[in-house]
Amino acid sequence: MDERKDSDGDCVQNLPQNVQQEITQFQQLEQQYQMIASQLQSVDAELKDIDSTLEELGKLTNEEVYKSAGSVLFKSDKETVEKELSERKETLSLRKTTLERQETRLRTKLQESQKKIQEMLGTSGSSAGAQGS
Image (cartoon, rainbow, N blue to C red; front, side):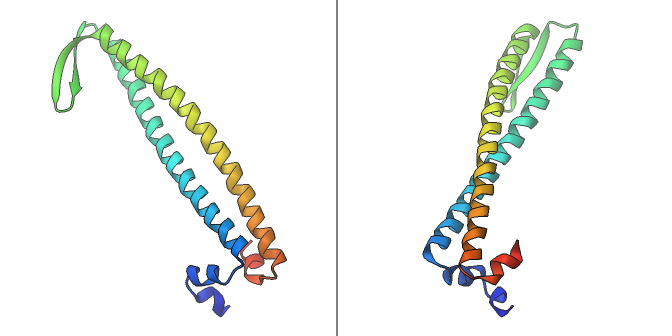
């Protein structure tokens, strides 16, 4: 029990080299997974925004609209803006598909790595690893 009170770094340093390497790899995978999840969240938010904008544009009877570029508004025609938004939506949809595939692959790798670490800790005689499962 006292060993668990030590900082995580101290506990890891007491583990065999191969277990330390696997834990480091697991942590790197975790960071990658979080980064992909964050990107996916941003893409989803932008897609929802585009859908909402396209819906509002569809309700307009005016052919002239204003679009922003930074802090400046420019006059444009409705058709051009709809086309630009549709193209952006298509690009983001492809990006979302790619991110979802990466997320799935990373989730699988994380599960495999976690299982491997648990097996290593189980065979190295560490009761702390077995209790943490």
